[in-house]
Length: 181
Image (cartoon, rainbow, N blue to C red):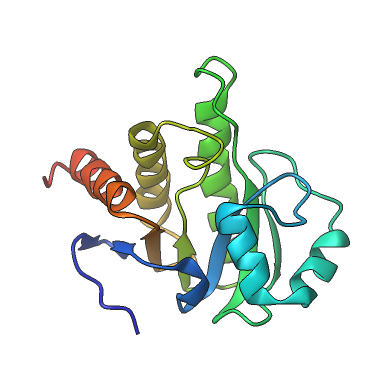
């Protein structure tokens, strides 16, 4: 079980941890458009899930940036994996903010459709896709907190941060969104 400390409010948590070990109904994979695995979170999720995930992903025929597709969780401690390709940062003038917002919204919609009560997200697009961390955290927190006000099923969303800088950025974004610094 994860020890939740720091930001916990409105069914929203920010923790430092490994998303491949997080127990939730669904975890989100910051995927590439092929859905066939890659580096970072994507590679770690594919490795931890085992070969069945790749087989199922091949049948999905990829996924467009900002959209989301769902598979089984296989060897992960989650029933589902929701795959979403985030945008590559190109300076901010190529619709990156809207695409990133769509990633979070579409993942939460899929989770709600599958009656998931708990969902865990990584920080989408802030690794090799170079989306500015503070900006990405603000978009993610806004979309998540807006969504969990009135979902049918999703009640608890956790941002599982890979490092302390990412954790701090999401905690700060939460404080800015809620006015609770």
